[in-house]
Amino acid sequence: MNIGAIRILGVDPGLRNTGWGLIHSQGSRLSFIACGSIRTETGVAMADRLALIHRELTRLIEDSQPEEGAVEETFVNRDPQSALKLGQARGVALAALALGGLKVAEYSANLIKKTVVGVGHAEKDQVAMMIRMLLPTSEAKTPDAADALAVAICHAQHRAARARGAA
Amino acid sequence: MNIGAIRILGVDPGLRNTGWGLIHSQGSRLSFIACGSIRTETGVAMADRLALIHRELTRLIEDSQPEEGAVEETFVNRDPQSALKLGQARGVALAALALGGLKVAEYSANLIKKTVVGVGHAEKDQVAMMIRMLLPTSEAKTPDAADALAVAICHAQHRAARARGAA
Image (cartoon, rainbow over all chains, first blue to last red; front, side, top):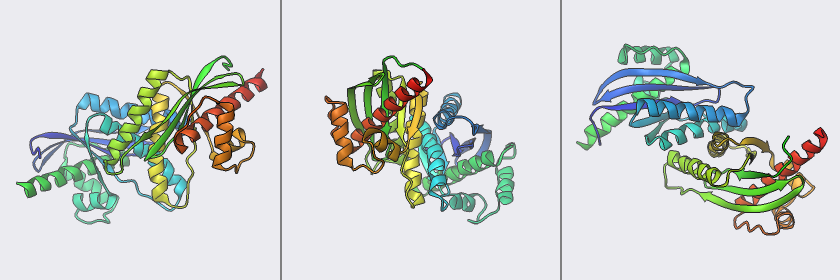
């Protein structure tokens, strides 16, 4: 496994807001590159909203050339209709990353919190504080951009741990 | 609305099998062009399976240049985990069609059956028989290719009806 410097793109997919966070990782050293959110309007046709998510992620990958991607596993609640909509945004994000040539890993929300904060049921505030500590120059202006940085950090730490294990 | 000759791409999305059917429509006259199925293997990573669906649909659109797309609304059962998986394939299909420049319509399974056969709870066999009657040269070798032709036929008939209503 490559433990040299790589760029990781974290994505927290959602139909209205898809957060993304780009970090640089070298071994256990992390640094912030950029983050943001892709918003789609509710009045627009579903296919066009999904096409926008694909197009923006594809442009981001072309511009920033990350090597690996990490996507938050969508929380599946009890409403199949909501799960379907979340799934649509998530499918587009996963496909866009793979089509962009990225190796894609998936992490559950609990594992992300446990990795970043140390406990699986951490509050949003604790996650935000840890992101500021680990990536001091980051400025996540939306919750989904912060979540995307968290999944990128989670992936960086897991791949570093795997590399140590394999060494 | 264009009631001249157009090509319609019908899609029945699914993670394992995504059916597609391409027809030619001029007013109420229909003819078969092609149909098939995009299969993905269960052992492959989710992002790569979804990327394959996107890539194959994009290639199909580039090769056959359809003007409009019609997608079957995914049946949402009681299991949110299944709904999420179906949603992922469906999202990729909707985005691929919109990114290919197609105007995309969505139809529920019941409306498709009602339009093609005349009753909303028609059996698979009745739908298959009507497809053979309406598109005599068609050869749908898989159930999802047949379903994709059915959604394409449904869209052709609805747009013809809308054009008559608007005339």
